[in-house]
Image (cartoon, rainbow, N blue to C red; front, side):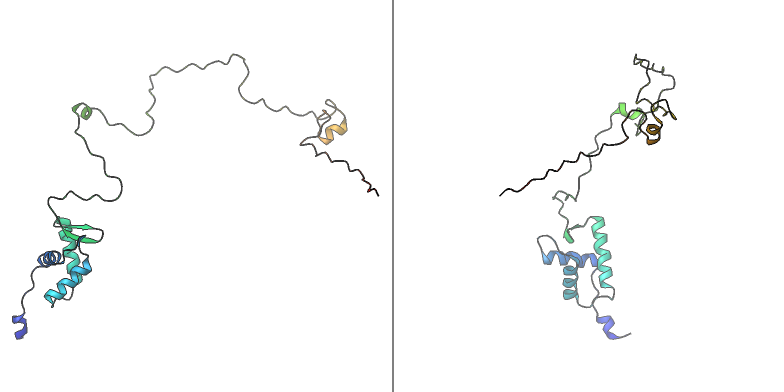
Length: 181
């Protein structure tokens, strides 16, 4: 083994290096990963090959355990007296105490409740006129002779003397206007 390996000072653990970097930088809104990495590189110099992956791993672990707070892409040391920061969106509803009466009652299901099979059937209301509801049905047209002439039956007028459809627009009569001298 080379003599340089024995003379090399061992690096402190990554969580310790991260904490000293955050304390030394003292930025108002915290420090991002790049700033922390640059500080560690400048202070400790000789770092392992996978430094960026190790730093990311330890930052995530410290964030998950609650030692660091991650807010707007910056890491800060958790202040035990500070209230928790609110994330985006609507906060969740506060869960109140459960009342003893509601525990024994069954949960409400979604949607329309099922009909009671033992309920009496409602009586249909009568309109009183005896006629069926809605528009009356179209009557079949006579084949010929009853409603009018054969020409009227062939043209589709149905014997009323009026053709089917919208009547044509009335054309204004044109009158000649002479230009006087």
